[in-house]
Length: 492
Image 1 (cartoon, one colour):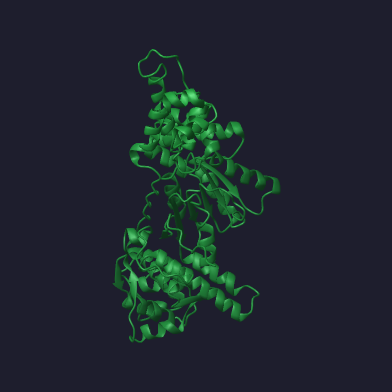
Image 2 (cartoon, helix red, strand yellow):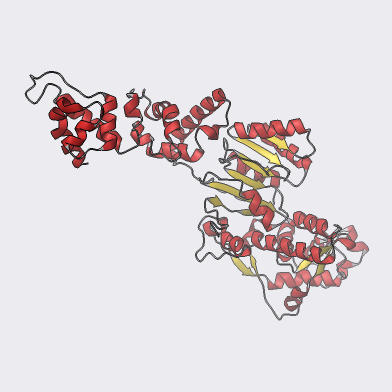
């Protein structure tokens, strides 16, 4: 039985080529200051460097990796769960068992190992169902590292080929030409008919261009140097840079020397990265990372096939990547109220020594800021507000929303908050006050207690006889109030 699919529509998906990656991460987190997030890094050292850089920028940040003392790791986990707005810079050692529903963003500062790893790690964001952001940075060095890890491993050839295929699928997701979610779901065997509208490629569809000539020049440079060099040396040849290495090998005499001056160094690196993403070339670890041509590139080299590349990754190669807009939990005009609600949540959670999301999830606070309930009845209709939380926190948060103390309700009435019986109780109470001394105002004073009114509102009797049988009513009260009460009950 399938009870769900792979789609997480509340997650915004984005990939970005690396260009000053530390600054890209800092800028991204700065736009989400005060939100809880995870930044996954490929090395232990990088987690500590990024955490220090974030702290220096005024963020709450914590490093986490397997090399830490076990007590320090447990303390870091506890801090992340209990503290609002903390950013965890971690290796993949952090994640399994993370029970925090209000993680608002996940950043991969380095390329993950596979689509499966990517999906599992970004899936730790937005488990409360509220909007959350994801960003993955990638570059040629990431691709070389992942290829090297596969090639240098002890796995049999068949396993290595499968691992390369999985990496190719991830690179295909990174260099996708259309809706990223459609590509991701297709990998898991699910079809999405329409673009998702919640990924970077839907937000701004990529510009494409005919990259056949550029790819042929790159492949030609590889073959004329006998597939013995990596991207850096090949780019120098294409740009016509007469470096010592180029001169010593006589590569300045090649026909391809200077044949690619229409692009900058960063742009040629973007071309080679897309070629690796399409599995046209692979670094050969037995030859110190030298690029070798794959079979599917030969048709392009011979002019028998063409290829489209993404213009945006070429154009952006010489400029810093964009700051992806944060997923909007609340509108701009409600941000101040949302912050005030979060501050109250933090205060309550700190005093109770529980994680903030145990009090209320971000999604519930966002709904409060949007709907701005005035009464306990309205507050009870906020998603995530149950009977216990209504009793415990309702009046407190209403005071923040309305900037005034919440009127005290009788316990019997408070129990009806959010139910149809609540407004009915109020109408019955108003009606009995008018009839407390009879229709003429001269009879003996007579009323039902709040507890009795709550029973009437809950049971909704349909006759005077049924009303009389309710505990606390009796013949005398039924005679005085039945007409008014039954009219109210029958007209709801």
